[in-house]
Length: 358
Image (cartoon, rainbow, N blue to C red; front, side, top):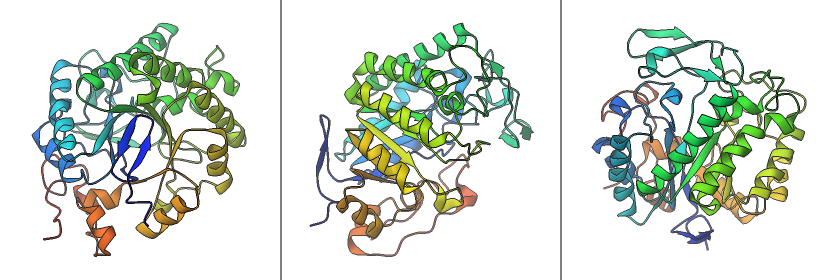
């Protein structure tokens, strides 16, 4: 019997299968507010046992890209209610991913009064797209003060409360892919010499304080976290202490009692491979649900589940282009190919118009 398509319980949630729709930025939230088009998109993909939303900012300061949603205003909460209701109508569960972009941003993408923040004033290499003026170099972030850090922690906690009000089943902290939480963990972006910088015990402090705050706000059984050890996206080079640092992080997250860890492996898209030893370390050190993601097809997913390597499998691009992915994987039908040219447009093209099987 297939494990991938069988019902499973994680914490207090019963999922109709072990397939997770991974979080994917799609830039359809005009004015940073979720809308009917987004509700249609997620509802089309509610064959997944669990959907994790696109990265959603807990703060005006975290809106690094054009047209990404937030969860800090009344309009945003109301907009997300449409999405959560649409997904729940098909008996899927949904977590919202809280993503503060930190230094990955530009003032032209932020609302009035918001600031590009980071652990240290170190700009990312490269350029970022702005709707107003096209491609622009990444901004040098303002180094966060103790006050900024305290305010950001409370923004995460309030965003978690807002998410539950909007109808989500829980939240995922985005501590991967070079965004704010990971910027504190990594030594190339964190050059502080206070209690948030230096040794891993200090560099991990902000992440762990955020995780504790959102757990206090909504309950640890509703909180997951995404990590990307060996990820290099957004100018995050590898460094010698990475294995030891993430082992420390795994143990601390286990002690906090979070619902799950979601490990991202982007080697299928050209990033360095996450060593099997790192994945097995997380399996050993973290005693609750482990989600693996990165380049899975149905056979590989089934194999890793049967081998006990994880509890759930997350997939991104196959779900982007195949709203009925469960049906296609079960039947062995051919998959639609995703069109990268339409990933980040503003309308339905390449978003809600991928065909399902008739």
